[in-house]
Length: 242
Ligand code: F6R
Image (cartoon, rainbow, N blue to C red; front, side):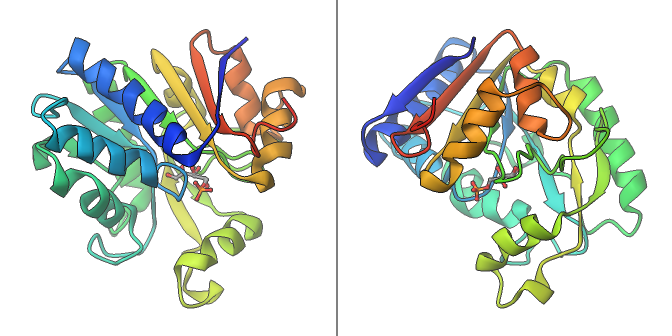
């Protein structure tokens, strides 16, 4: 059973999420962090930046590996995940730019770029803490539901529902990339510890399916049930059914 934490307020959610990451860095300054984008971790990253500014945490020796990136957006595109991470965390703390890794979605050969990211992860060793959000369809990273899931970093065609959900960040759905590069399920499950975060009533059903439903590739987040060290951080709404 995962360790489930239900935060009472948004502030508490962000405090707890940032606290978990900060404690790891305090005990292991060279930690390998697996990071996610999306709206869920934004407040947690903001709180981490505050902790950094207060002198409570340093990223100077840490390494980060992001889960995913859109294919075809230049790295400095306002909606690229590289830009998201630079703006919301990396440029605001003392992490060395060369220690931050995001799959290179603008590479002219995304398949090759994905294969290289797998090698990079292999060389890095096990991620100490993998941060995850979850899609309404159960995706983690951009591992979309299906008959089978891929283990390592690969190019994926995004589900229509994912493109619709993410259209809120673009001018229109037509601008949402069709493909992404994502870390695979084996790489995610290889992490020593996983922090799955979800907020809002619209995530309640998928959180219940992921934690209490059958373990199935049709709900990639349900595979987290097979991992021995998962913390689930939810707000009251997302945790309503668990
Ligand atoms: C983002 C990622 C995705 C998101 C998921 C939830 O790097 O891997 O799996 O975590 O789509 O997104 P939000 O947090 O925007 O609801």
